[in-house]
Length: 97
Image 1 (cartoon, rainbow, N blue to C red):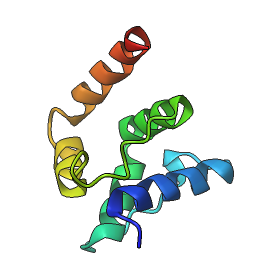
Image 2 (image 1 turned 30 degrees about the vertical axis):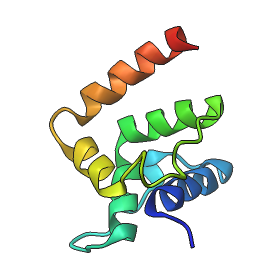
Image 3 (image 1 turned 90 degrees about the vertical axis):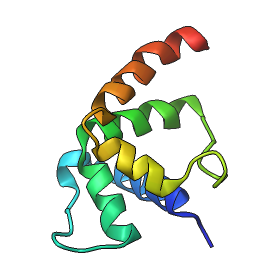
Image 4 (image 1 turned 135 degrees about the vertical axis):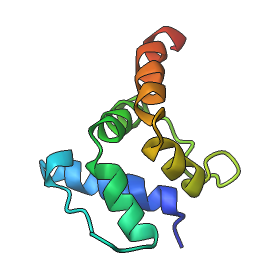
């Protein structure tokens, strides 16, 4: 059974393979649960950009619940500083490699 983060990445990879972007994500209105949260995250352009960057660099921290908690990730990305933190990570990432 996959974790919610693995499900998010799998959904992202499937959509990307089909040539879709964050604009093609259908947000499930007034729904709760992991699937609705995954759709809402993929709908955000800065989360999509972050997943594109991380996926092409081969970062594989999604598989460990101790490293990446889905609910914490969801809360952070939907907070007022979610986009800022993604922007900082994307701009810093090339210098770390």
